[in-house]
Length: 230
Image 1 (cartoon, rainbow, N blue to C red):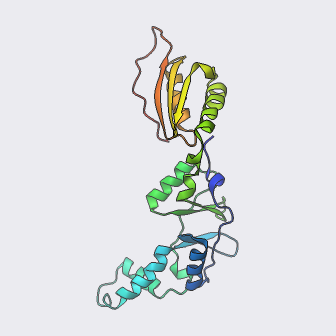
Image 2 (image 1 turned 90 degrees about the vertical axis):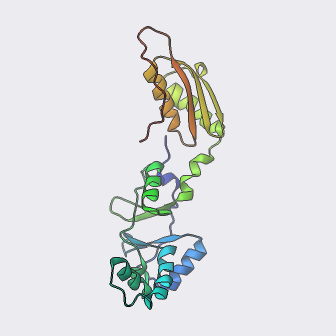
Image 3 (image 1 turned 120 degrees about the horizontal axis):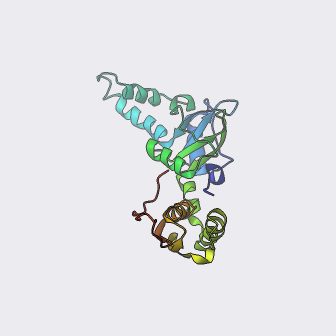
């Protein structure tokens, strides 16, 4: 089955409180080699996140403060001035934080990161309490699976268990995560469904689909296969 956020996240994630001072946040990021840290309250609920960008914004805002003093106030300028005088997480943080649940799939996590241009997501339970953190690097873990592992899952789970097909009747070749399928299947729908299930396996980069339906008068004309987007 597809990996979930829970399976790749860092469960013992470091966090800070709203009163954690600027210098301590810098030290935490450097010591742990991370780019951002969640801000939580006394019950562990995520309030926001402080990133390297927030810390650098303070330095940039201080440099801009003199030259921009005569300009009309905008939302960005007001935010910059707030961060310029920030001394702790409560005024440094960006909130509310973009979070994700532990049972979400990795595609959903990747979509959130891309949409909001963030590198890490706090993982929270149904009440919004911090469970861990998932990073861009974590999302790549499934692609470390070997071709042998992928091959075994295709034969034993997809073909034998899910599709009830003799695994030896289908030729499965894998090279660096690219799967080539060839052989005959019951009908067009079963062939396309099999290819889609293989595409969804963790570690599969692409599927080259040469599966064809058994010959018969009522078989519909095959359309080019496109990997479904979920």
